[in-house]
Length: 128
Ligand code: HEC
Image (cartoon, rainbow, N blue to C red; front, side, top):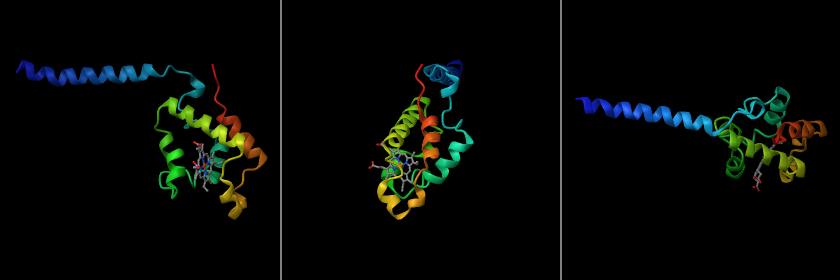
């Protein structure tokens, strides 16, 4: 009887321990914590209008979705969110997004100078 009781106890302790180590894996740096959730409204509005359509969980393009899925990002680890931001910064710096081929048919999808600046300011990853 006693032994049977020990099994769930061990599982609970193991679970608590696991959660504890997961937390300590990402030392807190407030400005980077929950990177995507803290997106300023202005930035979010630009993303919703100019990026989200191709980069969401139900997007038609598997390629776009696999490279960047805004819906999934919020739930990913901080380190992955930071990597995603770095990638976003990179494509903006190069002027690669939205894709040129897409803009030929939909020129209104192009980012304005101010929008590029706002997105780049947001996505620039701060190094400690
Ligand atoms: C018309 C659809 C479309 C729109 C709009 C769009 N993207 Fe993309 N995006 C794609 C596709 C397709 C790819 C994959 C390109 C490839 O790998 O050749 C991609 C790839 C990316 C990548 C990954 C690049 C890499 O090399 O890993 C990032 C980051 C990205 N997009 C950011 C953005 C941002 C930021 C915006 C808004 C400013 C945006 N995208 C708007 C279709 C789109």
